[in-house]
Length: 157
Figure 1 (cartoon, rainbow, N blue to C red):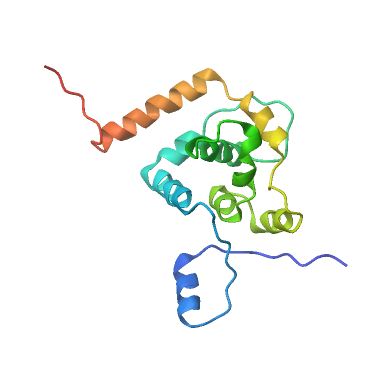
Figure 2: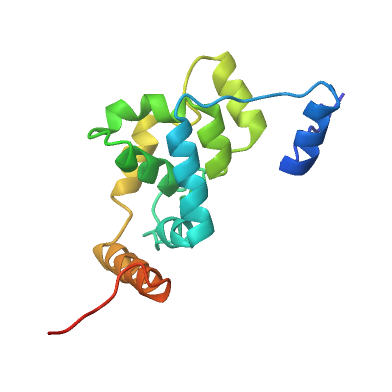
């Protein structure tokens, strides 16, 4: 017999109403609340799409979208985790992993097995796939957003 398909829809307004009405809800908490807010800010400001949209040199297909793996690597850097080996606390955080694009089923399975949603070697291998030109282009796209929003300005004397 086939397994039933489960679908989780992320709709903050409906979730808020369900909690207020006392309905049963399922919660994935984050140990890194500040990082969660930062991801939301990066998405709203337009930076997240640039960072996760960097072109990747194709190699062995690891079964994960490049955007998701780049999202983990971005979080690792923002949390000042210097080595890939230290990224375990990021990839075990269900809320952050849901925010960057992993599906809830994968997150729940990883939590049951007390491991991360992705292997650290997969992250390590992915770093080799990002060409220098792609990261340079992303940098200048960020500068453009900062200037368009007038968060930085060019002045001359």
